Amino acid sequence: MQVLTKKQREILNLIFSEYSNRQIADSLKISVRTVETHRKNIYKKTGTTGIVSLIKYGLHHKLLD
Image (cartoon, rainbow, N blue to C red; front, side):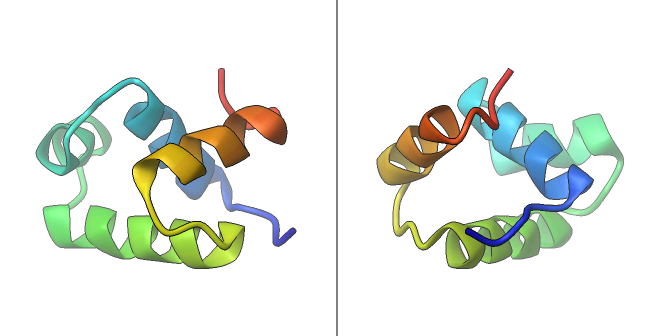
């Protein structure tokens, strides 16, 4: 398991809270493109390919609040 950065964990929790990319961007005051890049990197680091497997991964590894 690769370690997620603080920002990636923050984004993962917002994804878990059902935020859209636009809502995440607005909440964190970053661009939607930056959110998309973070999501891509989160998927790569966790070895997941979709939202369901990502959430299961986050729950299993206790990454979600």
